[in-house]
Amino acid sequence: MNPGRLFLASCLALITTSMVFSIRGDILDALGADFHLNKEQLGMVLSPAFWGFTVSIIIGGSLVDLFGMRRLLAISGWAYVVGVVGILFAPRPSGAVSSLFSDTGTLILYACMLILGLAQGLVEGVINPLCATLFPNDKTHRMNILHAWWPGGLIIGGLLAFALTKILGLDAPGLSPSQITFGWQVKLATVMVPAAIYLFMIRGQHFPATERVAAGISNSQMLREAYRPMFLLLWVCMWMTAASELGPDQWVSSLITQLTGMQGVLILVYTAGLMFVLRFFGGPLAHRFSPFGLMTLSALFAAAGLFLLGGVKSPAEAFVAATIFGIGKTYFWPTMLGITSELFPRGGALLLAIMGGTGNLAVAFVLPMMGGWYDTAGPAAAFRYVGVLPVILTVIFGGLFVYYRSQGGYRAEKISVAADLA
Image 1 (cartoon, helix red, strand yellow):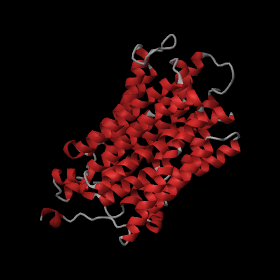
Image 2 (cartoon, helix red, strand yellow):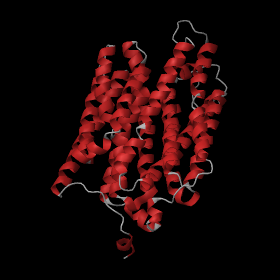
Image 3 (tube, helix red, strand yellow):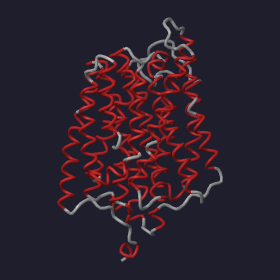
Image 4 (cartoon, helix red, strand yellow):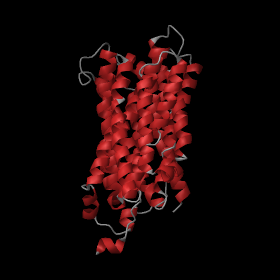
């Protein structure tokens, strides 16, 4: 087994996942114009990516121990290729469609977004338990480093999209429909490059058994962990943290472009850069403030950033608001996974899959809602409405911080095979 190579392949798989996210956000308006979709329909097209992510991460996480991590990670790589190729060659409707399912082209688009979501879910379903297994004594820190490559992929995808916009002249006035189509197709096709690289890296590699299996924890013991009250509370929180982070992220490029006239993808790249750097400090910060103290501060910043984003009028205001929001959302996803793996190690890949799947299910719900708010109340209102969620999270995480402090402080649980067998 080569832990370094496996960890690097995991990082590349996550880069592929987030490149899909940033490039999809950049081409959203062009894709909508090509397929004659309004904003609400675009939100519906994006939803299956997250529904698929949800189903795939839960099923994949549950089957990791049965089918093996290498096989599932390989399936994800090939699914990226199939999904991208399907979108590139989907036939375009001749005009507006009343339903996504009434036209062959929009139906294929919907199905391929689902395939991309399934690929993304398989990646998360494998790399999270793999990381916890490779680094059992440093989970929160390593989860933050691994998931630093989520914003790393956003940066790569965003800069690629911006560079291709300039190189191909896609921001010039009076572009023909064929030029617009060619532009978004080239951008989307770049996703297949990192997918091919990580497929090559895992070829023939030996993957370890998960931490739960290695410790001899039974399936029934693993399932019981999902019903513990603290896990159920964290599960509720995951709905709100994911919706607060990833819902606005998918619309931020369009929002900033509409409100300020600047290339909105640059704001996405900037906040991703903040996240990339800050996540390398997630472990030390969680140690200093405790994971729940860190999450309380994150929720405060995320709420302030979302309300500010809803009122930007200039690039300078967008920069300030995005900075605050970027700091706030940085630790949501990896720290929630780190807390889950530390407090519920007997839950194994299943509990990590449930948390990851829940996060993506939350985004699947919030995207069409934001699209509807975008159409009816404007982009600014859509961001302010979502900003209510981190306000609620501030109260919950603050309460958990106080609770654990009263109990002597936050401590990660260790699997004791002898105690479990007894």
